[in-house]
Image 1 (cartoon, one colour):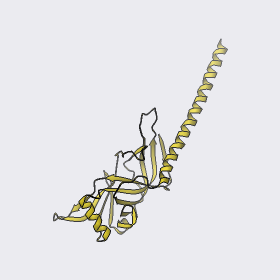
Image 2: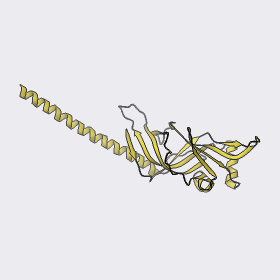
Image 3: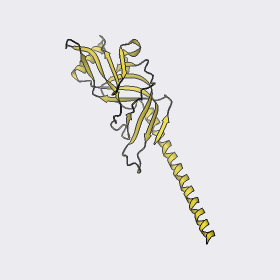
Length: 216
């Protein structure tokens, strides 16, 4: 198992299906407030990029910088719907995960999103973030895992929360290469340790053989 604290240099995106709905007013009429969860704790994801799955540990948002987070559509800065600095985007970490709520603005994008969410055409949301600390368990013959497993222990910051048409995973190819490079580093370390253990065992066997010869 590999645990590492990393600089917040690579941004990643994760998506969540469902839990997106429009709150009704006290009168029972449909309102304009869209609520949902951008992330949930202790839930294994579907396979990401075909080689690992991940989950978010409770407490992962403790100390996370969420001072200036935007709500947008498809992670587009020009399709903004709300913002935490203006108070129009409300973010809350509860027992389930990272919950968001915002009132759809009376703009073209806002009205479109309200209608598309109401119809169910847009039912997914995701968030863009940096990871401060995570732990990996890489699949091998000893643990019998089919996929590598990653647990995110600490987020460094959240950049945006987004309503999305299609879910996406890592934000860029660079972020994928960064994760893959970490595994390659781990594999090299394991190979080096294996060679070292083999040499030590060989020397121990030789010393034992020499000792037996002396006793004879």
